[in-house]
Length: 356
Image 1 (cartoon, rainbow, N blue to C red):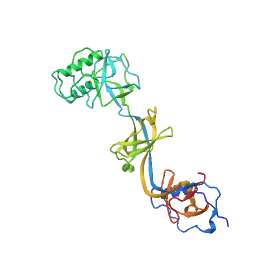
Image 2 (cartoon, helix red, strand yellow):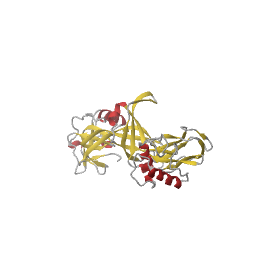
Image 3 (tube, rainbow, N blue to C red):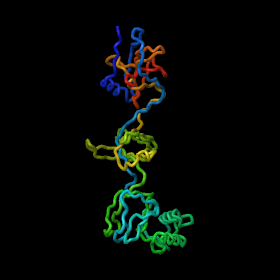
Image 4 (cartoon, helix red, strand yellow):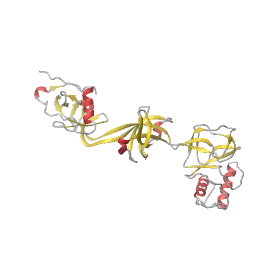
């Protein structure tokens, strides 16, 4: 009697995924369908090897790709706005951000905001070090930056003022320089040329030059949020790139499509920023490694066959080209492969994969 071969149906695979995909014991196929009577020679079939290695499952979450460090820059000067950058402009150390009364406001680097003018006789402080460090990088200050505003600091300020078309006073009024941690990109312009600017009014919305991905993990998946952990990011183009978890926030309640839920905010940096091309903002899928099986046998999912209502197996190709159905137990499903075990399956064997 000719052997009847069953393809794995969608319903059957759903059962396998539910019972085996999480790394549980899976479906254990008992008994055996192997017998000389059921073996036959197959002149040409598509096959794949039984491989031994590591399978890693993933948990998928939607994330948002965008530029990092979004914030506003406020004006520290009273006057009329006379120059503004275009949206998307990248501004680096020592370059102008905007102009008030036709005098530029400049970008300097540092974590502390400016809170006072820089002049001879001022108290020592870390803001002086930030100013001197910027002047040194621009080539105007030749000493090691410290927290003292000295005559040499004033001399460097005058040289910088001369080079940038300012009056050579040797002092820096409050609001003439803006300290930010790094170079920036203009994300939004919040005033117009001709507006009168009051101290503290927002002028520009800025971001960092680097892009990152923000993801809200479900509270139940918080064990996946580990700083330094590696993830894979699926881009709208259909390509993927790698990323590293660089920040994990505290549980936060957010409004979602089904109501409020507590999530874990996660920040992912890009291993290859060039991989996202010109994308400025986009919805992406972030794959967090979850279940993992090491040193296990696996085959393509398509190699699974339904032996009957609740048993599955693979069709092993022998040295003579004849095939034999072998019952298997399934384990983790990951990356289009499935973990298998059972008598009669071994590394290096070839199994039939219909439609490969």
